[in-house]
Image (cartoon, rainbow over the protein chains, first blue to last red):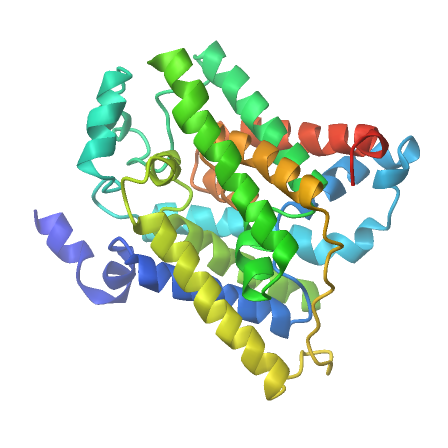
Length: 199
Length: 137
C-alpha cells in the first residue's frame, strides 16, 4: 500500500498511471506531427524491409535492392521504440494489470485462459498464456501471425501507423480501404477462425 | 546529430505505445470483439487531432526542419490490393495482438518472445519481395 502511495506521487507517478484513451490518442498525433515536422512520414513496417536488405536479400531480389542509408532514420526510430518500452517497464509501469473489460475476461475463461493468471507475467501487456518459449503452438502462432503482418504490410504499403494514423489523417482513400481490410481480417480471425480452434 | 532526434522520437513512441496499452494482445482482442471503446478512442483521437495538425501545417504553412512545406505522396488507388493486403495484415494482427510498432516496443518491455513475432514479420516481408510480381497491384 505504501509503495502504491509513493508511486502515485510526483511526476513519474503521474505518468505511471494508466493513460486515458484521449491522452494516448493525442500523444500519438503529436508523434505524427513531430515526424512530419522532421521531414519524414510516420510508418514502422518499412523497417522490416530494411532488415531484409541488411541481411543480404537485395543481392537476389530487386525489391530489396535499395540504399538502406536512406532508411537509417527509421531504424533509429524503431531502436528508440525498444528503448522507450524498456524505460516504461523500468520507471513508468502501472501497478495494476491492463483493465480489459469484464466480458472479455469472461470470454477468455471459456478458452481456458484465466486473465489474472496471465497478468502475473507482464501485467496484461502480453499474452504470455500463448506466447512463451515452452509453447510450441504459441511459437507457431507467433511466426504465422508475424508473417501475415509483415506480408500484408508490405503488400498494402503500410501498417497501422502508416495507414490507420498517417494515411487517414491525410484523408487518403487507399488508407481507408487498408484499414477496412485490417478489420475484415481481424474480425474473420476473431469471430470465424479462433472459435473453430479454441471454441 | 539528425538521426539521434529520430531515436528520441522513437523513445517517446515506445513510452506512448506502452502506456496506451496498444501493445497488449488483450486490448487488440477486446477491440475485435467490440467489448471496449479503448482502442477505438485512441485511434479516433489520433486521426482527428492528426488531421487537424496536418491541415494546419499545410495551411499556415509550418515548414519542416528542411524548410519545405509538407506534402503527402498519394498512393495509387487499387481497391483489390488495399482490401486484400489489409485483410492479410488484419488476420496476423488478430493472432499476434500487435502491429509492427508494438513488436519493437514489446521487446523493450522485456517480452523477448516478441522477437519470434518480429522474425515472422521480417520473413513475411521477405516473402512479399519474392512473390510480389505475381500479386495483383
